[in-house]
Image (cartoon, rainbow, N blue to C red; front, side, top):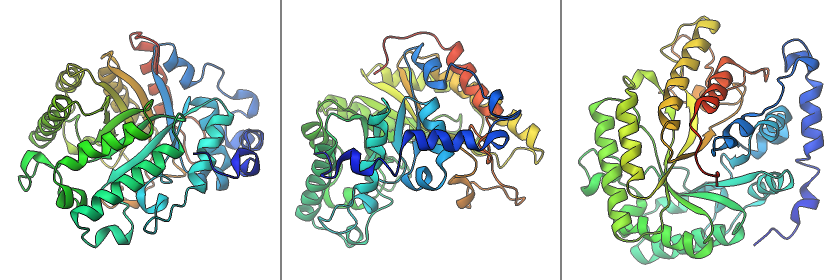
Length: 382
């Protein structure tokens, strides 16, 4: 259900005119050549929509409040906002049965007020769990927890979410678990059925949303990622045969050339196999790890743009790919430098996003724009 205080009471925190004013006030720092040199229309959202694709950006409430240009860019360039942290379990239900959704409400209200859609990330994930979830819940306790958590979130935002990442990162084909599933508190308590149950609960509470399984490391031409693709397809086949209300696979798209070569045909073949099950494909968390690229900024940005252009050219050649979301906006705010497995070893700041730390568009933005311009047209985006 909508929050009791509603958008009017929170509007002062995330006001569109204030956000856009903040971007304009950055002047030359935001746009090379000054405010009159800002990129002309069309926006990335418009370029994507012309080809039947939805384009979105992840944003947190802290970013919108503390760095208004981030939110301003998102409002100007995207058709969808994705709360980056606010709907993860540890933030949404920090105490047993105690929900804290003001921050999520603010972002959903911001999207609604500006004609943007919203995507819910994420209902079930083995990370970002509150401490009470790590204590080894019994089968009955976990079943109750899933019902309460998914039901509460999906009912609250019913009709306002384009889609939900219902289960995030369920695959880990290490041989430890049957079916290539990751060992998680959910699997330990409920077995593989937790996945189907989560989708059923979400469908019951928010029947119009597109329900998605979200996974990573599916694009590289390596034995390990081939095993991940096979395990993902096996799980999707089981869910479809069971008539689980899944409608899409999310491919995160955290691009990292250090993980192996990219073969467009291997990736496209996988997407076609997913589509053959009657599912759409979403690119849900696009960014790039530049740890293997040169220190020189210009050379590094060119390499990142080329890598991303090749990836999107392959993905968007497939008509089942209906959505692209970037996992962040500006290099000023990124998870990449906070992760020892993705940060650069030379001490330089990473440059994983479409806009630099001064909110200027980078070659990476140009690569995304060109990918949308070159993509074949599909049916009306949803």
